[in-house]
Image 1 (cartoon, rainbow, N blue to C red):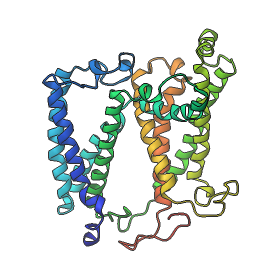
Image 2 (image 1 turned 120 degrees about the vertical axis):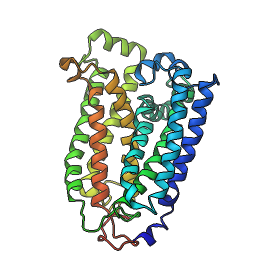
Image 3 (image 1 turned 180 degrees about the vertical axis):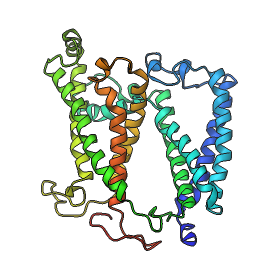
Image 4 (image 1 turned 90 degrees about the vertical axis):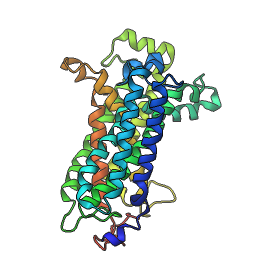
Length: 353
């Protein structure tokens, strides 16, 4: 198998991309620490958004050197990840360390503004011909601190790929399909099916609350605040987000229902054809990442000492939503894996092209 996995290009070079990111971003940390312009955290962030960020109180002189040191450590770790193909014994522990960095870049550094930018994009797109909302979407959604978050997301994907490759090397798994000889993914499939239903319910809760506000019903909010939302017009943007959340809830069912493999009758032009496996995996995976960063923001801003408050707060369930959708996506990935042309394991699944 080792001879075959050497030809999986992303597994062969992902460590290099992760190392280059660590080198460049670590150099930026050193530059910011020396007083360079463009520090995107804390004192350099948008004032109104600092309370939601885990780095809202950071200073360039304090955090810059830390970023530089983490970048140096990441550069060394990337080299170790690159050696995992030749020395599988180090693959598992190096992969775990790499996953920690990937999680930080994907979920801790970004915040809920990523989800806000994604969620409001369709609203601005549909309203553009009518001049609504009256604002520049790109200036509003993508100031430099948010662009920096997108850069960190890209680095997180590089680290996730490098860590996955090293982990598979350490377990003797095929670098193409991830299967390990003598092991099946039945447990992941079962957990993923249950998790999918959780990922269906949570966004519906969020949608019901937002729709209630749009109808003037003060559900989980005072009548005065609902009236203020109506006065500013923000309530309709919230209703739009609720609609997309409900649509996402419906689409999540595709991870456990037959129409997640074969396009159903109500899809014009595609009915009866196999669903390309990469389509739901890519879409659900990206949404999971966006929800993870928003979920970490919810962890920070929610008052967990007051059950009466967080039990009825839709935001408090974002971490659960992200975890459930991630598990459901992983279960779908395991369940729909086609026969592997490299290792010869598995059997062909309809719709797993």
